[in-house]
Amino acid sequence: MAVDFENEIKHLRTTMQSVRQVTDLTRLESQIGDLEAQASAPDLWDDVERAQQVTSALSRARAEHDRVTGMDTRVDDLEAMVELGQEEGGEDGAAALAEAERDLAKLKRDVEQLEVRTLLNGEYDEREAVVTIRAGAGGVDAADFAEMLMRMYLRWAERHGYDTAVLDTSYAEEAGLKSATFEVKAPYAFGHLAVEAGTHRLVRISPFDNQGRRQTSFAAVEVVPLIESTDSIEIPESDLKVDVFRSSGPGGQSVNTTDSAVRMTHIPTGTVVSMQNEKSQIQNRAAALRVLQSRLLLLKKEEEDAARKEMAGDIKASWGDQMRSYVLHPYQMVKDLRTNHEVGSTSAVLDGEIDDFIEAGIRWKRAQERSGD
Image (tube, rainbow, N blue to C red):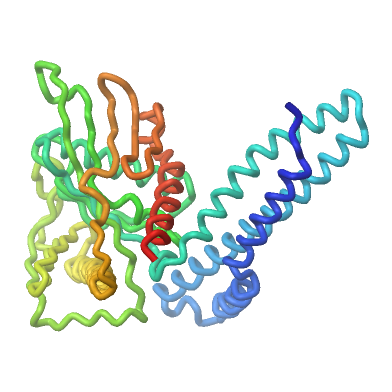
């Protein structure tokens, strides 16, 4: 069946028009100009931390701009190739149209990914993300699963060229992780990864069971937006309990000889944050406070949302405890229980190929919000 290039290209241009409106290229170009001016200041590197923030923000803004304008160029190139193929006819024309069909398939996929970005209009969606993974029920298999999930998300970030920083790892005795916390340093990281929050379930033949029995285990994923200096989350010292201890590695071994690790407890809410991956107690304390503020910021928003729903007389349960299953035995399948999106390539998913799940989750979440309006 011949491809209707005219309608396909028309649809791509309509979608890109929506993307451009949401992206607001004029605002983005103004932001790039301002950041370029700051980056060219002769005293920029007098403050190394600020210099890194400026250069990183400039790099991200340029990439965002190029992603949109580059897509427009690709649509133009596709249209030109189709016109050329139709004009030439014969074998050369057929070859050009076959190439155009391949380019169209990839372009549609890339434009769909950009379109999903237009759905990320929540208050904190454009923020960077702080992800915490905790082993749940299932013993050593759950700890191993927690480590598998951490690798999955780090590989996802790597595939997209996103910087990450591991803030804390608490190793289990036999294998895997009790918990881990890491940052994903990219625009809209929170908007994308927020739909990954919830309980994940793994079914497989346990590599830790000498009788080769099937084991079900669970791990919890928490995602919060990274706080910014403009956020008004002040925490009185009297509300904090800070403990220091020695950092530990796999099997409980000590990885340094000083009490540099920090455990910070927010007394009013009972929220606990541990940090041990920085070299000094001061650095770990600063990282712990940043993550604690991020969690309290999201908690504050959730409380406000709950209050609004209660006033509207429409209280709905949030996502269920189990939001995704990873089945490795007796068959291979990963299925999201909210969107019903499923794939059979479990190894690819666990290697970070989760964009389809994230996009389906974002569309599902927005549909839920619209239906509740």
